[in-house]
Image (cartoon, rainbow, N blue to C red):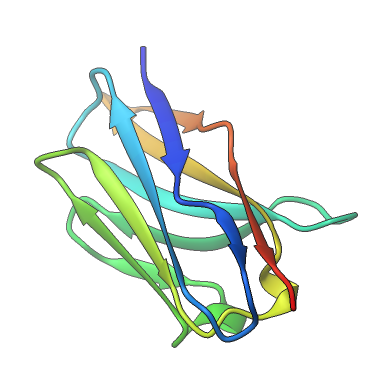
Length: 119
């Protein structure tokens, strides 16, 4: 089985920075993508960013230019560097792993880490 564990959340003032980490443990195939989603208060979980095994990236438009996603394949770890944080970025951030192997796809989720941006 696969397990995802996020860390790095906390409280920061507007304009500040945080870096989130997610470690993926267990066995999974090389064809995969790691990503971040978030759930803000009273809203549905939404896509933030993803990065493939070939280092191709996608970002939600509102955070493009402020957030950077990266991965360290030797550690099966994905990072989300968040700069110039805004109160609207407050929410629970979830790590996601999507895997395709032999025509079958699987999704895995972490438990989430809370990010609070407040004065």
